[in-house]
Length: 486
Image 1 (tube, helix red, strand yellow):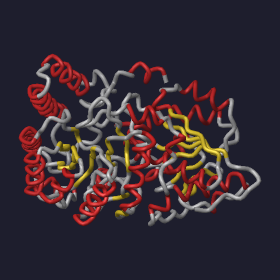
Image 2: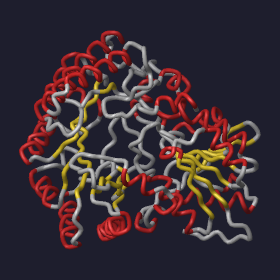
Image 3: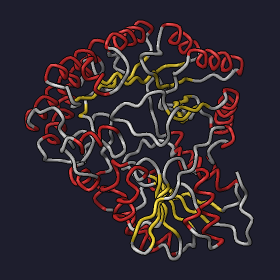
Image 4: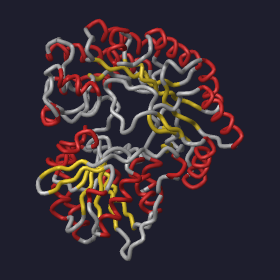
């Protein structure tokens, strides 16, 4: 990474926007970007609205009392209308001469639309460790944004989109996130995941970027998969354990298990390191087998999150999942027989889905559920950038980003209906499916059927349009009053 050599050290603020919940995941993207900026010689601050639930008025006061060159915020599309538009109004009114920069999965595929709607100066497109340093240098040197790779920017009322930066191949060169800039006490104590006790501390590790597949509902910043070195991952885990007392590592890779050899090598290295901790990882079913399950269990894996998605081969094929129903059932059998917690992720509403595929998905979850989590089924959402989004446009079901955000409320509701079943009937089916799943969960866990009834009622209200901000069975909507105050 280049070091910025200028008389003025760029001052950069990263805003971590609120998600209105208490269980906040460490913002890995800003973690790596702040580390890249600091290595390059920038002064960097983090404003954690997610953890401390600062309001936009408090943000305005902070900006009024400070001076920055870049004010940055990353987001996912699901938060655009609810959070980012209002936050952008605040930043634009109080940024002084700073450049307001948006980035991440939300703006990358629809940068022109996002810039026009938010009034932001720049949108970073794709992975941005190289881009953000170039951008900071451009700002303090009075350079030309046309020379900065990996951005879209506004110029005289138009939006210009530059050539993209190539993704970093050597992920070890990026080092670790700048954890010390973030409120680590809050991030390491707020999550209680499958297998944890009250005294355990959980934290995220990224061991690779990308995936070996491209499902039609998934959007990623770059193509292919790139892995960090295993010694680098182990050393990072050791540092997190020694510095922050982490006893539970959840790997936020899109795909942790993509190679038998890599899993074996990681297992061997972790054993030799002497690190004792619980692990939570992601896998596909076509790579997963008894050997991998045994290796993971030996090194402390207590939960494997798997995107099964559907029990219909027709639907899996339409998703471009490149797996079989038989592989789905085999992977579920393995995890259940070994007593490893498993994320039984199924979605519904893809082209080819019908009433029978939904019933089959529910039966699958109930058969293999170990009740580590409350499992429910959501309709698929064609977020901008994924293949299904462009399919929806081609099919005449969606017109573009403006139409998407006018329709999108949250991911438990239909944004685009691909099934041909009337919306009202879709919601009746989803309510019945999730009633079965929620009732089954509480019968096998606490036995608190009043809690089950209350949760089912929230789904009924959501599907009926009586409430809109409820975000599913595993969400915490206790901060609804804070959302209304923004």
